Every structure is written in C-alpha cells, then in structure tokens.
Image 1: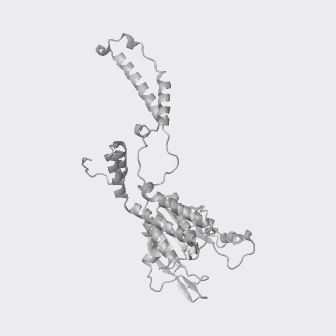
Image 2 (image 1 turned 90 degrees about the vertical axis):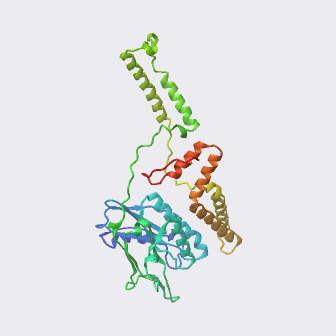
Image 3 (image 1 turned 45 degrees about the vertical axis):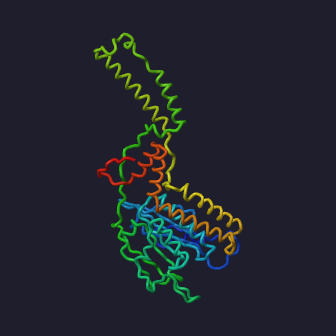
Length: 389
C-alpha cells in the first residue's frame, strides 16, 4: 500500500531502498489483496554510489550502481497476470524496460522479479521473443535445471509454477556464477530466486576517443546554413583592406620579402573569415539520435501505422477480449513484428540495394554516403582494395 512505502527504509539501517506501489487508494473501497508493488534494497557498505532511476511505471523500479570502472543497472519488475487482456500491458512494460536500458547507456543490466511467465505459456513466449530481439538472455531458464524447478506454489489450486525470472544483457551474463531457487525459505506464495555474481568479471566499457567533428563540412549543409554562411562572409570580407602596395607592385616579377609577408597576412585573414563563418553557420543536431533502421519506410512503416491504428481502435472500444477489434489488433501486431524482424535480419542486403539504386541513378553523393555508413564498424588495419562500382 502507498502509506506503507516509508517503512521500507526502517527495515535495516545498513540498507538503502527504493519502492513503488500500483494501488490507487483514491478509487474508493479496495477489494481483494493489494498488488503491484516493487522494491529494491542494497547494502550501503557494498554499493556506496547508487542512484534511483525514475521509471514512470509502478510495475518497475530501477537503480544504477556506479563502481570503480563500470556501471550496473538493476531493475525489479512485477508483471500482470498471464491472460489475453493483459498482453498489451505486458508488452508495454517490456518496452519501458528496453527504453530505460537504452537511455541509461549501461551494458551490464539485470532485470529480476515476478514476470508471471511460466515456460511454454503465452507471456513466457512473449518474453523470450522480446529478449531475442533485444539480445537479452533469460539466465535462469538457460542455467537452472528445468526438471521440476518452480518459484511459485498455489495452495488453492495445488499447482507449482515458474514465474520469477532473471533477464540480463550479454555483458551481465558473463559475471553470473550460480542460479538456484531457495526452497527452504517461504515468503508468501513465492520462493526466492537467488542469483550469484562475480562483479569483477564485468567487462569494463571502453571509450574510443575520437577527434572533434569537423564542422567545416560543405556537402551536408542545407540552404539556410548556406545563406547564413554567405551573409557572414560578405559582411566580414568587406572589412578587409586592400593593401596599397598591390597598386604599385610589379606583379609576378616582385622579389620584395615585405610584399610576400603582406600577401601571407591577407591570405590568413581571408581564410580565417571563411573558416569562422563556416563554424558559426553550422547547426548541430540536437539531442541523441536513435539508431536508424535501414528499410523502415519501405518495409515496416505501413505495418507500424496499421498496428497503432488497430490498437487505438481496440482501446476506444473498451479493450474487449472477445471481439473483431481485438483479433484485428493482435493480427496487426503480429504482422508488424514479422516485418520488423525481417528488416532487422536483412540489414546488409537492404543497404546494398539502396547503394545499387543510388549508383543506377548516378546519384554518387548519396552512393558514397551510403557506402561510408555501411563501412562503419568494420575492422581497421586490413588492406582493402577499391573495386569498380
């Protein structure tokens, strides 16, 4: 309950904490058991530099742990119960988790909690599919012996379920040394899923130092930048005095050293004006650009718009689970995910097709621009020979 949240800090003085509750106490009389609370605790002596991340979702709590040479992101989640009407909320939570990880720019990430995703059922299939797309790993399903494993027991239905999971990035998976369910401790209806890690095995993120971007880049200027450059050059160049020595000099037959100095000085003035105008007229892109997906407009955008439209239509009808609008929404989402997956898996071929199209149109500016973009990330130091395009 929201009024219980401050008590978490009083459990033990050696631990820091963050927590949230999804229970709306303003909605009137509450029925049934409170639900939707997540929390994280950490030992202050072990992790002295911890910052809480705002998640804007009551089903997710997150902290960022700063260590000597690296950072670790830890998220606690509590997913909705596995049923068809909760699937959009489940996928929305996964999307929120992905966004938090992307914004944090941390390679080692641990996502733990009650996913309400039993192996072989709908939510678990969705979780594994999303993890595959994001290159995440469901560590407990990979490392824990699946024979008879369970984390939840229902006395009312006399059933055992594997609902709690640990999803990690590839960098975080390297430091996991052991995973097991602690069956000798009973908390409510769940058993603790224990993850043992050796944080010394986390690979430190290497920063590649690059020289500052050259702002004097003529080919990428738009018309407004060219106009601004022209006006600045015009106003500054008018102030450059024409030396009187030029009027009486014998031109190319001049051997006076002082005249050469005057020419050099004037040359430097002109070059400095041109360079300064180029820098001042440069307008950098604001904000962090998302990584572009080649072929999105041609192969994916229409399916994406259709999926968004079907989802909004379904919501406007009150989210019915047995209706044509629900079936159309599900089918549109499947089509979008299918085309997105195809586009992601065929990036190299799509980029090659784009370059071939530019070359066929003799659009060599965009052809070489596409070539440079495609070559980013290739290993350096190898000998490449140019070939005829």
